[in-house]
Length: 140
Image (cartoon, rainbow, N blue to C red; front, side, top):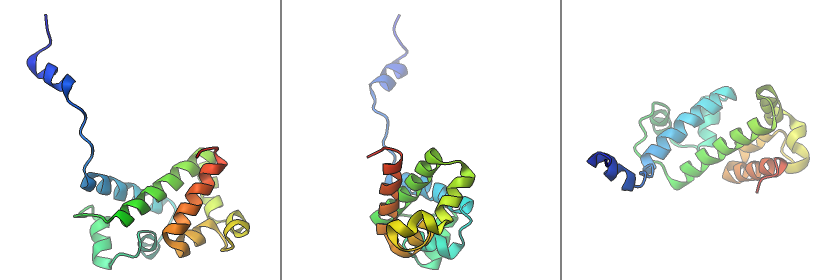
């Protein structure tokens, strides 16, 4: 006895890749949860997002983003990656301690704490911190 007709069709189909809009919305939802956990203000969140206009920012925050640029998607990915790697390396309380401790980044980036570097260094700082943390955990 065979599978029902609709089951056979489902077995042959590839899973759908998420659309750019779906990835953006999921990324924004994660971004706002992470930055709330990090106790960042709306202005600090805007800086991490590349300083979008206030109305665009509040559309993002409300989950009503129509589209995101490549730069915005990259920034969301970096914040998620930094958050995930920190949580592999440290307990939640120590993640925040590392982010806000001037000793964690001053010798490396010369800009005080990793959070200060993130907020002042743009996407380059995000890439630097992401790469540094991946190195600490033994990743590539």
